[in-house]
Image (cartoon, rainbow, N blue to C red):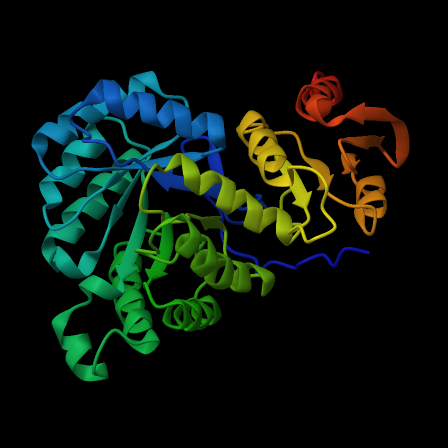
Length: 356
């Protein structure tokens, strides 16, 4: 029996048409790596990200030209758009005028009076603000007080910002307390989750290349989600943001939080493996990229655990020397040759998902 994770109840906010917090599913989001001023490139990347499963997208807004481009970008995409702003409050004001659904700011690097101006504009336009606290850009006085970007420093920075927003009767807020140090990030989120009921955006910042990002995110994001903490997640990968979707949904599937996309089970191989399982796994994964329907797919390379694992999956192959058994819902369909594995499996999966 799969254990159900009981999530901490947070107040809901709406980013465009997407609910974050409350009883909503954990939302997967990401950030483009294109030059926002290049509308065509940015829209193209956002569409690829959406196809891969991105539900909310964020873009960097370094200057007024980028802020101006947001209007065209917003018109050409379907998912909610968030503007990522640092230092210059005028960019936040322009981004909101150009129709973004949310903004992300770090109040500590903007100044109190400028933040107040941003809050007023967001309140009038019903725009969600993410208070994005980052270990790399904490207020100097907090770094001095705590001797560095500790969990307590991140939490104090967040609480200070929350007090400012609440003093202006603004509660359309999401929170993030990110660090590249997984332990720091975990402790900071645990602490803030005990002190507020605002929805939490989880992430390990600057997590690195895909393998490192997957490891750090699975540990940091995964551990917090298992404890019931977190309402939306972003896996940070150095490279194409499309890669982030597979890791993010993999974390959610592993915890039985959201069952979306193919859950491919394949053995690590050993001396008993008699088929090219590496090639098979890579080809199947590539061909199923972007599939939204949840399916448990077993690709097994020997007769020890293969038949059992394949029989437990929605569909699978237990391979032997040059051939294998095709299983579907626990039943053997037929024996097929190794060169037929990919086309036959893909065809069967298409039949299973054609109505979705």
